[in-house]
Image (tube, rainbow over the protein chains, first blue to last red):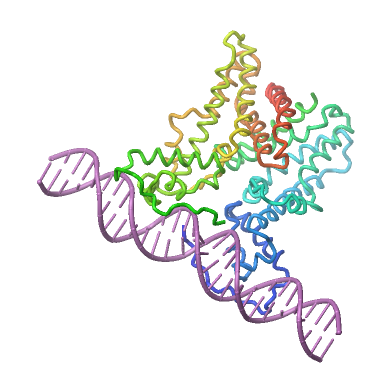
Length: 218
Length: 218
DNA sequence: ATCGAATTGTGTACACCGTCCACAATAGCT
DNA sequence: AGCTATTGTGGACGGTGTACACAATTCGAT
């Protein structure tokens, strides 16, 4: 669907060098992801926005897929940030048990809110990735970033410490909790209840979180 | 990524007309989806396989997106079939309560098995769809097909009838159950535990189903 | 300060994609 | 038999990712 009538020559730049093209491309890619999900993450459009010729990207990323991998990590980090921000709002006066319970709820609620507020980023964060990327690339793209999975694990540890979750049930508990919340998020933004998402989310999310809490304590 | 070195002329067909090009394109599209997920569903490749020129597709589908919609319905129907097949294996001698419990488990297990066995179809079934398709198209593509959502609902009704699930908790129960199972499936095929999927599935799936059962009975 | 080498952006080119248009071949009705 | 609607063809356009050779710049050793 050819819709763009953009300028051909991306030349309005003073110095021949860009400065930090890699970071600029990453930022542009994240914008594209936010606007239209993983399929909208288009190399040529990003280079256009940055004011550089398409091939310049190849000095900083091996391929579109490698670039997308970096963007995916960025999107995941954004999700992690949203969760951390929510966790930070928890009152420090809470007792251990109350804090643990509230923490788990906060993670779930922030997760779903993020998916609804930034569906493009959310979808990008969990887009299937071409496996022919080096494991090194994949690992490198994650280091140093807080990751939603770890945040959830931390809250689960807190629940064990508070005696709300039997230690025997701890291993694998992330998968249970994460699956439920992730699934709801996915079904809300794609899936058949797309459109009524916010209403359904308001109805279902609390029950879902309750289900998780009860289900973990097996 | 230009890798194909396919023949240029798709002419080895006896009669000018094809017979049932629409269905052939649908089948080819489902194959492509099975092999590589929604992004591999490429119009030109499908027409090539069917032995027809690319534009011929436009006599039967308005656009690639409309075609993809049909394929998505097909993939969803395949999932529904897998679930129904599993349900059919349930012993008819079971009592109402046992049957209800087994039914819910069967749906969940079949769902996850399908996702692991046919990740391409599964991803295609739940790929985000362009909203600028007519609601009519969207509705028409679904009629007459059994749909996984309905199958789940039927089993939940059975649980209510068997007294395993309070009627008060029935509305919205699909969303709870479906979210959990769908999320696990998604995380297994994409997500960070990709690769160890089968092991993790074996560990987690039973606990997840238990969680759902307990969580529903609120 | 100079000069060669490494880095980074440019230009051109190719194959592939979805889609539009005008045209050809056929099927079915009268 | 002939007219018409349907269905497949051929060619074209703009979009995409990416390979190659080349130009501009920065940087380190002298």
